[in-house]
Picture 1 (tube, one colour):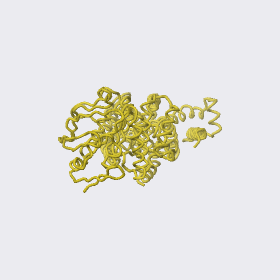
Picture 2 (cartoon, helix red, strand yellow):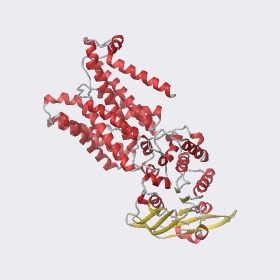
Picture 3 (cartoon, chains in turn red, cyan):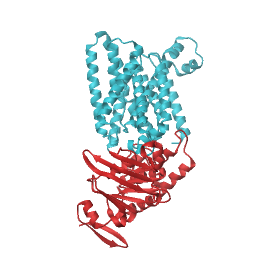
Picture 4 (cartoon, chains in turn green, yellow):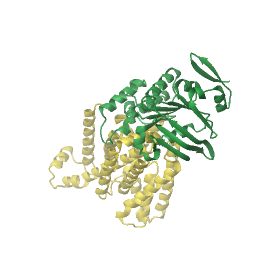
Length: 256
Length: 322
């Protein structure tokens, strides 16, 4: 199968520390990748580079076999979308109008909003349980509500590749798993794929088909979740003993 | 509020402000006569006051108010900060200092706008190079830098005033507080307002996106760099032209978009035209006060915009902290 996204020997540095050294990585349609690693290991920098928001220090990123630099911002937004670690908004825009901003890359600059756009916004707001907030001013939302609005924006943007930076932020456990499952299902079917940075290996194991572990000193390992998610690997990753227990056919990881 | 009702309300408000501001002054003209003379100018003193003094003055005030409000809207979107405004951030101060230099060096009037433009652009560049334009810009840091810049320009202005020949000082002082009395040509301010309005409306959608922050806007498909460059150019030009024509008038640019957002929300396709309209109306009203309160003498209009603007600004600051 052809790769949707490809990293060819990319390196990421912060100051003079090399966080990621010559990463070779292929993401194929229908895969859902989880990225795990200690704080400051370059997870967010990597996601921003994949979204074309940050230059890599070395190597090249290719989307559908074309260099990421060959796309305009608009074309890129149709191919790749990013859920940011924190979303905040200081202006009194109605939530419904804010969710519509996901359609920007699909709209003509001067044309009005199409019926299809409206339908997509409506669906996204239903899915992410913010339909009741439609008329609220976005600057009055709580952190968790804003996170759901940001998810709905990404859903209406409907890119081929979704990058999620700590999508569980601000969400209570009751809805967190449901919403992540929803994003994963939408973005790992047909010709799409999904890459998420997560803190909790147990969540990663439940959602992701593949894992990329970043050690923060340039090293990485990657592969199918079941081969990568071992207590040995995770203990080394977090420099702390990690244990695993089997519960209801799932794996639960906890620090020792 | 329903849209037709709103449009009706705004039209009535506009007509009332205009009627009041052309009726009152050092000579009061009864409303009935004003309406009559508007449709049938007859060459009498009243008719000439109306057509040659009051209407151009009201129009001038409206245009200046519109320019300042437009500059405020753009600055607030570009800096992603609802408290941004060319007066508070030092842009007007830079333009004013450059204008005073132009006065003192007796540079021809035609070049004053260019001087103001250079001053405004210089001040804005300093501000942006210190605070950065990226996401995560600290509100306090931005406002503080702006206030420091304004103070710096104020010191330079005082220096220039002190060094100026005594005969020139009263005129300079009046202009510095914001003065609509020395109305020069309406053409340049009117053309600038029209061009700025069209640019802002054409780019209304991407401007909305910018409120999400640079990175998020870029990831949704906005070419942030070029948009920012174009709109900053428009904001600086609009400010510079307003300052050239009427001096550094404060608070209209800050307060107007705020008040308008209560009604229209943040989307720029509604915010931009409504702010220009309300900014113009507020300025006509402030000008009316400045012409009548100690008539026949006139006060600089900036006195009233500041006296109205300062309490509103403080109130809005307080509200944001909650």
